[in-house]
Length: 127
Image (cartoon, rainbow, N blue to C red; front, side):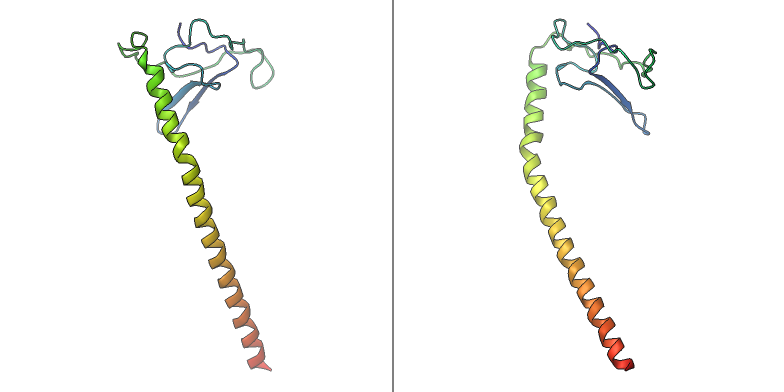
């Protein structure tokens, strides 16, 4: 079954470079953007759109489906493994960003302290 664009959990986002992401917000469609699972238990029909009126969702056409989609059961496993790699790396990346942020804050405090000292020094010289 193709991606159900009328599902509450379907999301499509286009970027300025022309790329489009078509996905299930619940991460239940391992073969996205081409198809949803036939027996998806989370499917819920979208009842309202952005302005609280029924309308149609306008998304760019789905890219051509590779021949291997739907015939190889390892696609979901491969995507899960890739997601695990990203999830395993995330804590270290966040720790590195936090460390960098602390360094920048310490440097900023040092600069502010230095500017205050210089300002006091200039005031004293004027007196």
